[in-house]
Length: 116
Image (cartoon, rainbow, N blue to C red):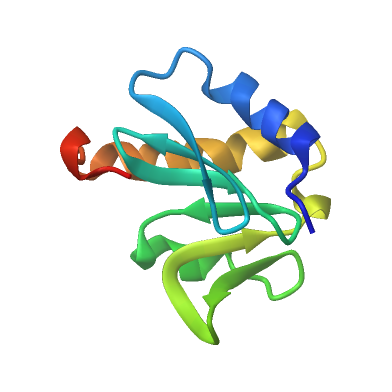
């Protein structure tokens, strides 16, 4: 399944003007990086991937619309998979994008020479 281009456009609008933002194809989708750190992505399996503090992520999991991201059978701490039903409105999407952007900003910038 290809990522949702409409969702990617909605994310792009929300992060427009954010310093250090770049786009990169990852996880079969389109990720939005802040200073080289992934913040959110339009997932290749549908919905949104959000990177956030592992300490806060578990509190947002409801196992219906928000789940831990699983990669190769392993749960990824601090990464959430948000179903499209939870990001229908701009406010809903904006809340998730803001969480991802804030966490990515809290991380040290990656040296451009080490980025792919």
